[in-house]
Length: 156
Length: 115
Image (cartoon, rainbow over all chains, first blue to last red; front, side, top):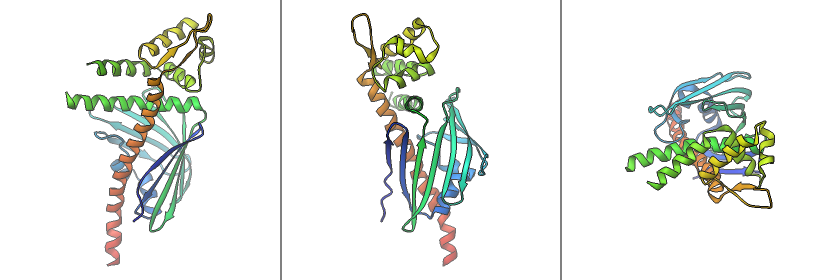
C-alpha cells in the first residue's frame, strides 16, 4: 500500500512544492483537475465552503474562474488562464485571488506521473519574488483567521 | 476574550495590501522607515501610520539605533507566516482527501466493466 501522505515544502524563496500519491491512474487525476463537475466536489479548502461557480476552459488560453462561498458572506473568487495542457500529464496555469483586490499572479505547474497503479502528483507554485509569495501567504492567512473565528464561534 | 481581541487586531492589520507588502519586506530582514517607504511611493507619515497598526497588532517590533528606529518581524509576525503555511497544508490535505473519494467513485464503473 503506497502512502497517500502529502508533502509541502518551500524551495528557496520562490516556490512551494506539493506532492501527493493517488490510488487512481493519471488520466483520472488529470480529469478531476479540469472537469468543473469534479472540481466542485473537492477543491473546497477548509470545511464549510462550497464552490457554486466553476468555469474551467481546459485549453491553452482558456479561462478559469472559481467562486467559493461559506454561506455567511465570506465569499471570494479566483481567476486564471491556462498556459499549457498535456493531456493526462501536465497542466500549467496562472491564477490570482480576488479578495476583492487581485493578488499577484501565481504560476502553477501540476504534473501527473504513473506511480505503481496510481499517480504521483507534483504541484509547483512559482511566484515571481519573495514579496509576492509572502503577500500571498499573508492573504491566505486571513482565511485561516476566518476559520479560527468560526471555530471560536462554535466553542462559544 | 483576550485572544479574540488579538485576532481582531491581526485580522485588521493584515486586511491592507500595503501592510502585507511591508510584512513581506520585513520577512527578508530588518528595515528602516525610509527603506520601507521607498518602494511604495507613499509619504513617511503614511508608512509610519501603517507601521503603528502592525506594531499594535504585535506583528512587528522596533529597535532604537541612534536616530533610527529599524523595524523587524516579531516572533508573532514570524509565527503568522508559519501559521499560514500550516493553513495551506491543512486546506490542501483536506482537498486531496476529498479527491481520493472522487477518484474512487470514478474508478468504480471502470472496474465494473472488467468483471
